[in-house]
Length: 401
Image (tube, rainbow, N blue to C red; front, side, top):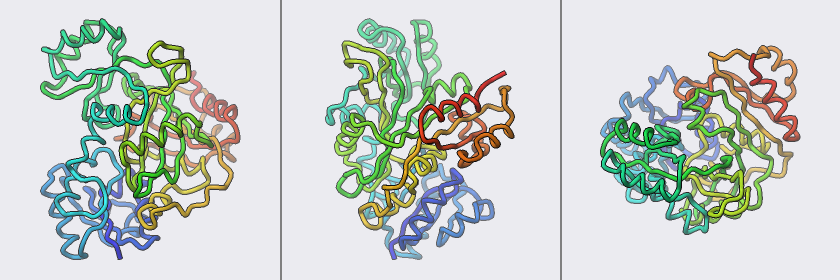
């Protein structure tokens, strides 16, 4: 029996589904998390052979002790994953320290974590990218002004090694640049990019050991997560029942360039809103960033509703068999998540939503507090036969007084 250590199997609270899929394929699934055993979901307990409570996981030595305990008890560790952006670097360090057979090692992780490194692989794949520079502090004011002379305002800034929308923002003039440089953490690289006017779309999926895509789908995001956080907006995004041909073509090339093996991937692009000299005609694709893990929150469930399949099973198939065994021929849907903010007043009561769309709603509830800045407070997942029905549902959910 192959040993698979799953880091943080209890968060988000749907992540036990990865563990169950692995268990069902014969893996010995061993969990390491910071929650006491009594607080993890019963489904998670069932999916795991054993759980190790590591109360301070930010202390790397604590995680090392946990992995050593499992290795001493169960033998060699073949897999170690979290499928969570926050833990990717430590996952890689643990694989290196314990000679875990599968997965990226610490010396390679920069290509998955540093936005500036990602540009190399996007370009290698033939993708268009926004112009960019790296800055550290106030001494780089002149550098940014020179960048603006060429690319103009607005510009977009974010940590070069960041998680999600962490400290990402749009700057529209010199005063905002000075304020940003004075208040950012000093001696930490931030990437500054020209602003791309477009809608964010993602190429998501699972690969085999040859970095070949064995499953893929597409999300459309409106608006950006950075804007949702900054303005405390409610949110909507949706999963298409197909992958646009141009996105799949460049997406597969990007996956191959990154050499993504037996992993879930979530690669974001802008689809431009207008013709530009640099990026070409409207609807061109411009690479934004690569995230070599599943899309965040409950997005894997949204993928399942759109595809009438289980991406949890597909990922486990990749690890167990190096191929997909899931039936992908079933009917596909437009699957949407529309969220609300508790501080906003809406036209329709929840009871109206649940009654009108009782045949479409797949799941609903409150997001965990740590996810609410990015995603909203209360979510409603639903699936439809066409985009028009999806848009009407979103209007009904988010219409404000």
